[in-house]
Image (cartoon, rainbow, N blue to C red; front, side):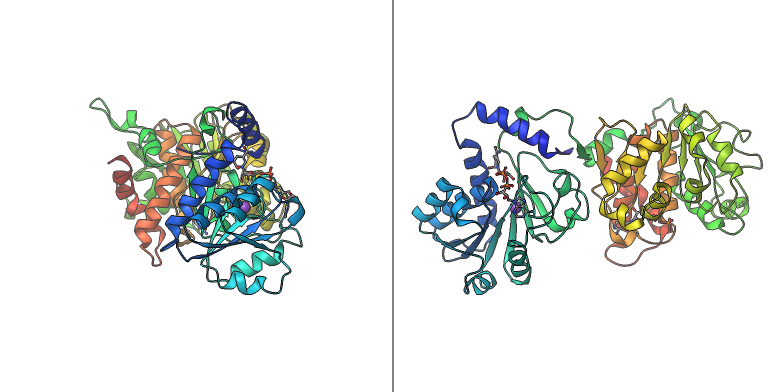
Length: 481
Ligand SMILES: NC(=O)C1=CN([C@@H]2O[C@H](COP(=O)(O)OP(=O)(O)OC[C@H]3O[C@@H](n4cnc5c(N)ncnc54)[C@H](O)[C@@H]3O)[C@@H](O)[C@H]2O)[C@@H](O)CC1
Ligand SMILES: Nc1ncnc2c1ncn2[C@@H]1O[C@H](COP(=O)(O)OP(=O)(O)O)[C@@H](O)[C@H]1O
Ligand SMILES: [K+]
């Protein structure tokens, strides 16, 4: 499990830990880890040209101490001081003692210094930052972006919002971010995640004082393996779970086929289909149990998936919602569902909107959702009393309970942005719901498998939704191997 904590939580944990340690010990741990990561990013340290973009807080302090360590090993280190009179005094002394030099952002030589650097450390601002980079710092981000140097951000890319992943103005684009103690939510959530490059966590001993429950978490293979259902010797198809798919329409039969394709590979023992696309479903998947009744009368089902390709037919959506089993609402179903009916359900509901659908439900623009995903997913979960999986470049899953960490899916590929791949995901997640997983676990395991299957299907080239569904077993095998 990869965990991320909000700034306020990090600060409290740091205060507690600092009280147990000699002065400056934490900063030295951070600087040592940072210097080692920088050394690993360079072909050689001796003779390398390193530029430190240095703000006036402790983030600048970490950067100067790391610079001092690298200068002692023979690198040529220059600190560009954003605020020379308010720079961390001891860290600055350490750099100067090690042979480093300083300059200012407006010095005529600064652009060429940055352009000729091998490595740029971004120590402008860390968890103390709010809003995009200030006007005096913004030009440094532009110079760093234009330089061929490797850019390493200290703790986080300066200018991003650490708690939300929002980017409200100019911000550094890093190749590598070296973060301390715990991940910050913004390092995992787009658009900020995209600014962070690869992320390396340095242990500074903070785990001992951080709360056990993070604000945001990201499952890894072993976590997902522990969630996926395994048939026991006693299993039969009903015990493994039957997932019902009430989807598709005469106009969009393909959505039903693709949802069934995902569901058949999701671990349920059987897939039941109701709706106008039965012929198309059976032709492609003779394994499907087809019923000509609605969801309430179709036979035993442990979870319903409704909405993909539903068009304008609200009846099956309403009927599925009126059952007392978990319901996954996707695509047209999100629009057709009555909010009060969703809120009134006693069995769980899982909603799986993409940003456009989420925007319509929230009455905001798509851009607003994409720029503030964490807020959007939490607002929807609270507003509908449902678990919500918000799809897109960062897929997030939130429950209505604010104290449950939001999950960020770490797998996936932009090649998944292909028609019908969301239908595969809804079938897959519905199948896991039917197998007995909670909505949070079903959604996160499904997103994880789907993202991995997307990568396997694409292998760097365009793929189609059917291929994603077909790659699910390979992803499942790899996760559980
Ligand atoms: N507190 C601790 O125990 C530790 C803190 N560490 C470092 O300390 C950092 C936090 O230090 P601080 O609390 O001093 O805060 P920061 O250094 O993150 O930021 C504060 C400074 O940045 C300036 N600033 C704020 N917003 C800005 C913006 N949008 N554009 C440009 N400048 C801006 C402020 O004027 C202020 O001087 C962490 O990110 C981490 O790098 C590490 O040394 C590990 C230990
Ligand atoms: N830029 C992206 N990076 C990674 N995954 C993406 C990206 N864009 C979309 N996806 C994924 O692709 C799938 C598309 O689903 P959706 O938008 O519902 O498509 P459809 O309705 O055509 O099935 C989702 O799983 C989503 O998370
Ligand atoms: K930084």
